[in-house]
Length: 225
Image (tube, rainbow, N blue to C red; front, side, top):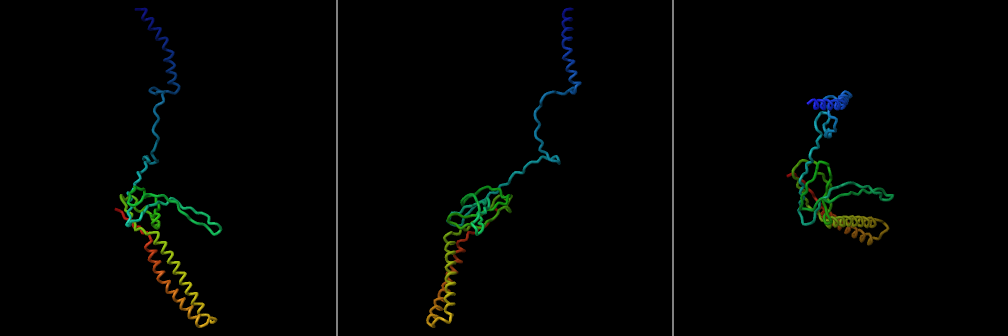
């Protein structure tokens, strides 16, 4: 029994230095209850100055439907930028870059809040004027209805327009020469009649040009649904 007491007393004596060093450590800067271990990293602070979390609002995408009121292919394009190219010493030319969205009939979900510009057209259809859809941002569905204008009709309108202009200018020139005193009466009459015929012929060409250009124009209407 006395031997056991002596052994226990020896163990206490051996343990006292480690206990003392631990106590010294606490006295050097660690208080009771502190744990000298690396804990889990805290989550990044996403709160703003008002104490509220800075969360991004979800982007609302609108369902955009494209419908064509014709048999020709119609595609929806988005303008992605403007390019200014040098056209020699005469000046600058502006070109546009764009990407295809889809071909009618189709539907796509698009973010309309960024103020992007669009147009419709194809290889067979005259390109429409630019239009924007940002005023429909937040709407659930938008319908783009297109009345396609054939490129052939637009080209015919240009040809008739220039033809009408040439006939009118030619007829006016002949009438001017007919009025000169140096011409004989026969020549004067011949030039006057020919000039009149040319001017009169320019009228139906001009009317045809207006009709063809109007038919070749692509029209777009947009409505929220």
